[in-house]
Amino acid sequence: MNVDFDKVLVDFKGESIAEKDPEGELKDISLGEAAYVALTSALKDDEASKISQMLDRGRLAKKMCEGGTVQVSTEELTMIKDRVAKRFWMSVQIVAAVHDLIEGPEKD
Image (cartoon, rainbow, N blue to C red; front, side, top):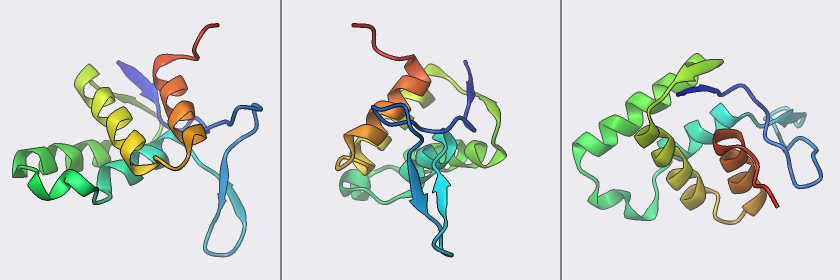
């Protein structure tokens, strides 16, 4: 599946989700940046990870660095969604935004 990882995350009001960069300027968060952080961050259960799992996450994170549209498998998308949910568990807006950009918005 081709996914555009340059797309910007948007909140429930449709506004871009941003954070301050080191210079204090607000910068929009892209799908790729959120995925990269989630894939490269150490999470609670990672201590028990096998080396192959760590390498898979590393290879996928490297793809995120390329930016733009990237070919990813269904398993890789599942890994991204799962890791984002664990890494950003305090921000339902980020989790929902990532899910919507990967799966498409929920229909009421």
